[in-house]
Image (cartoon, rainbow, N blue to C red; front, side, top):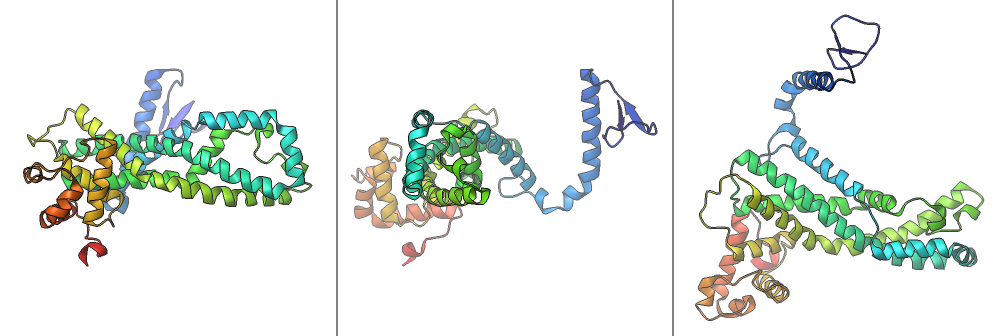
Length: 343
């Protein structure tokens, strides 16, 4: 076995060749290091000029972000598995294959339409959870990289919003059917007895089979995408949870003595998911959030001294101060004011 200086293996050409034993750990590592060195030499000048290597607001370039996205996507697809509901449905499909075949041969359109809608909802629920987990994995990788670049783990509101936005963009991308469909296919498997469309093999031509699958997928995809898009606030919460956990576990310096203002953070988290909200809508949603999880969006202490006990009460009694507070969060995070708020 021979290796050229460029790292490629060839036989018969001994000029400028490295010989190594593929059974030797040391030799394989040395070979790998030589190839890496050549790659750095080849792309070194390009990296200084190419847009993909220019650093963005997080201190990371597009090539670094792409590497993290790829890692998280691979984890997403590798972890594809069915929920308990879908496992039960898959089992029923297998056990009732003959009965299902008869029904589909009698009235395929009705059977496909009903099944496409019900299966889409079940898959949206399962995929929603998987997207949240993968989005959390990406947020964790992102946080580690940002802390490493900055050498500190105290994030301004604007930087935190950039991290949330990057994490949410990644999760929303996973939920698009181009990627989610691959997750669905891998999770379900290819056993013909478990096929949602048992009548396909009875059709005479491939074009007929493709036409039936296309009809099923139109309904399935529309229902799936409509259902899963409502999960984005949950994905944002999961990303923030992983960011907080990574900051807690990191050994980087925390240069501010006090942690981030939890009230401002709650406002920012809500506005990142729904930037079009007015101040009144923000207050109502924060109160609803506190009902589900008490003190998850605490009232600022200075407002409590004025006797208010909820965000919406503060909006009614301290309108100017509340508007200024929400507006300040928007400005510190680099967010533009919504049209409805300006009017």
